[in-house]
Length: 167
Image (cartoon, rainbow, N blue to C red; front, side):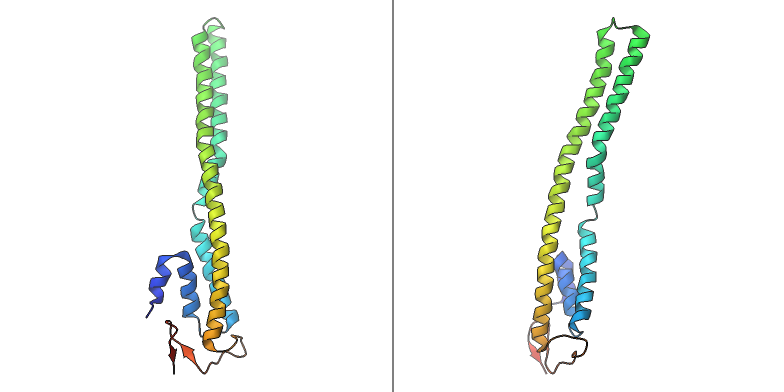
């Protein structure tokens, strides 16, 4: 016998399947609502870290730009204090500006790549889970021996979780 709770703990799709199996005696529209609700929770769990990654990808270039501005302020402050005669003072501020720009871009590029990859992967998983959920509804209909509707929820034959008919 398959344990529904065990199915729910092994994968996002397992959580959705478990909800369908737990509600298999209900009419199709009610099972569908329960599966959709479970699907929303599963998708939320899968996407929980994407906003943080997206924020990192977007703000790191701005932080690099901020560092550039601060570095250039340092350069102009050095010019005001020491004049243009000492190139090492100017080079220090320019170096600071370039390092912060490079650091911001260096963090942003892999963050954007990771964000886009994960977003795409999650979207593909969502589409596959939706297809499987529809298939599950069809299987549950066949197992009950009739179309699951609010009017015709009674079934003369019920099935166990393992697809074994019971009287």
